[in-house]
Length: 169
Image 1 (cartoon, rainbow, N blue to C red):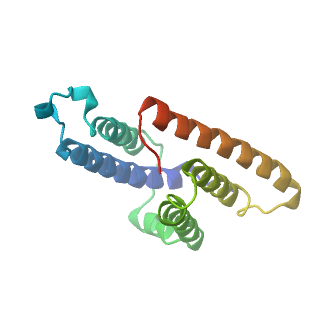
Image 2: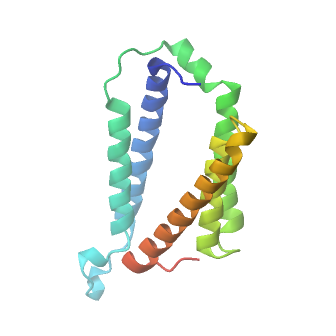
């Protein structure tokens, strides 16, 4: 069921501001990291460079989301109703549970590529199939989730190990 544009506008603005704050916190934390120039290393070898760039990208994306032009906005009471909606709460808790399980239970216990693949697969399937559990769509959703999870897991692992030279758990 598609929500009206005005309902999405408040969710986008709120999410945008959260991403702006989170991105700026990441930038601040990356600036606080040592740069090891006193040991003769170059600025581009600083461990905070990549997180800083990603934090700026996150803050920039949040700004695009928060400040984009929308046709009509809901009132404050309508926004509160959206945020306290039982379906929205379930989706938020599902996402949080998956993220916590990935970070605390899977990463470090099983190989990183497998943990990432399982996380992406479960996340996609959870948000695509369970809201609309039509049995006829399940095989296609399983296949699509698996292919995306395999591709994402391989890309993430190769990107971080080969390009960023990060030793993954």
